[in-house]
Image (cartoon, rainbow, N blue to C red; front, side, top):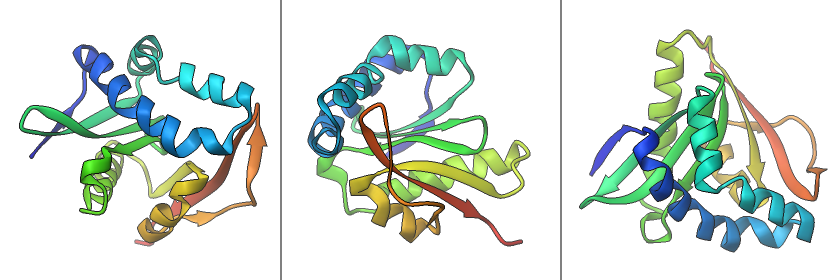
Length: 153
């Protein structure tokens, strides 16, 4: 397995990995409008916009196939973390998260991270040490659990 930093040449592959996962795991918790909004945000042009805006993405590849992606916004907010169904339960999400965390720390993050967890992913983030900061929040028809992680030095 190879983990590397993403670039603009990867936007189609990123979108192709995460879109079916969003449909399967996130859309069932969204309103129709929220579902359309979140699906549109996974399109290649949006991924390109995120990269252009300075979001940092890393990719996991196995035999030249994209199997996981992590994206960080503003050196502190875990924006995307998706792993192919075939690779779930093998520790890849933790590996990707720890890499993203370490990159942020190396770039000056002092140990505070946030995530707006999809409802199906809350248990994963709890295992990473994130804690809910409020109850389930719904905006524009999309339900999330706001969470944060504060590393103790």
